[in-house]
Length: 176
Figure (cartoon, rainbow, N blue to C red):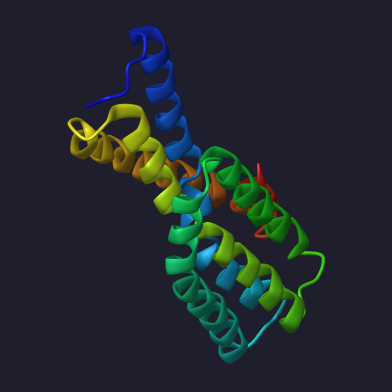
């Protein structure tokens, strides 16, 4: 059963979920191809080093999924946890252009990958808390709509910004 809330507060919470899914979309999926292009074209990294960096960060993220889910389950401050994770990812994005050598880049992207594992379970838990079990499946579909819309918007904005200002601007754009 959905929590007992006024319809105005529930509408506001649902709009907040829409916004969270839209604006966290690019954060949840990481820098991915932008990072590879930036490191290859701007920093002149070789493909092996780029692959190693991305593999290390991805493996760390996969290994952190279960502990991240347990952390989300254990805390009542799910929104605060998402805020801390978003800040960690933002800092990682902002530091990468300043420290583009291998190990600092690995560290920044590993931190970002670890922090990103919080969003899936936290958004799911917050969604369940807002809409309840009865409306959960329908709401998860809406969350995914806003997530994908956010990804499309972020990719378009990143492509336009990189075309206009160069590939390095993507890190600042995603931080915003």
